[in-house]
Image 1 (cartoon, rainbow over the protein chains, first blue to last red):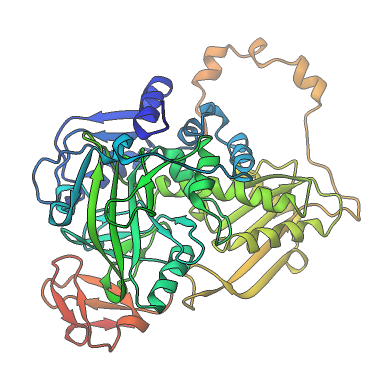
Image 2: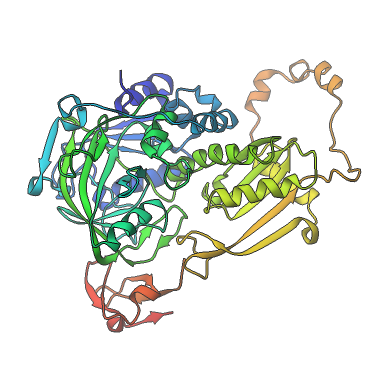
Length: 475
Length: 49
């Protein structure tokens, strides 16, 4: 069996049945009903996958496509998508991603006739976005948005780049595309300089490992199709596009793809849009995509991510943890773990633990993280005795191992992220390194600990019945 | 994020914000995200910048 979304959903329902909720009642995604349900659940700290059987399309009619929400909102599900045990969703998942991210696995090309995504092909005016159950997410969003992954191909070196980017629905065949100045933006800039449109395909729904793989932090020029294959653990199957030429390849096992062109030197107002930061990105002048085809499986599932919430945070954090672990290990071999906590939208704050042997290693590790990923704004480096998946422990290390005048460094005028609302410049930001490790060069006080022998000898269940312990409230 | 300015839609009075360098004083119509009305920034009854 090939890796596709439905194989994952079968696996999910078998192994984490309480993570999957099927909703039979009709729902209007373009009128905030889907995100209202997700928000109600989030308010109760519940993050299941929601499978809407009867969503309405944008034109208010019953859609032919069920809608899938919130796939990436837990690390357990992300671990499952990489073929791991759900309980391995913390450090083991980061390390496994790092192991796979170090490799490339070339894709294979199959004929259109064998590609599930070509079971239905709609070209030109038959390709109507209004027939899709596109989600309007937050109050200030001006329209429903497709928030999955546009794929572009470099016109000079022929590698593909995949990126999550917001696409405002502007018409039945027209989208407004927001690109930060990163890899897809670079590709389009090259075409635009020659007044050429940029071919683009938006991968609407695929196996979650495809999307985790697409968020690798590789340098510009690395072929994302090969990188995604390495993360998925199987070569990505590709097939020729319908309207972008035989040599523009699209994922064959996707549920649905939208083909089109980013117009050259055409910009229109787009946004605001509730972004991953938890704030609205402002209305801007952004690019326009003219849609040329929609192809899909006969019973395709339409997917979106709940931007600005755990669904995007977890999804974005895990690949960065893996990629930066590999990068930091090159300069600090004793790195133990890298984690992007929810408190920083899994982008801006980065926690690193190292088994420090020499004092300078802390800054080496932090600088590698800052250089390796421009999202990273604040780096906290701790010793290996701190569990960086436990924010309380990280903040305890900051409280007890940091002298601000000696252990905090500010680096000004570094490339940041245009969506960070605290930036006063469009591009430039300030970065901060907090060294919360103990010094190697001088003796340091020891953490309190109950003697290990006493812990082993004095068993809780001998003094308090297990049933009583189980009833005790967790705080 | 770079400099923004808040505007008020003259039709529905809804408030939203825009990218200052790209849309302030540019004679481009803004799009109200609440009622889809299009208007110039100078038509906004209130601008906060």
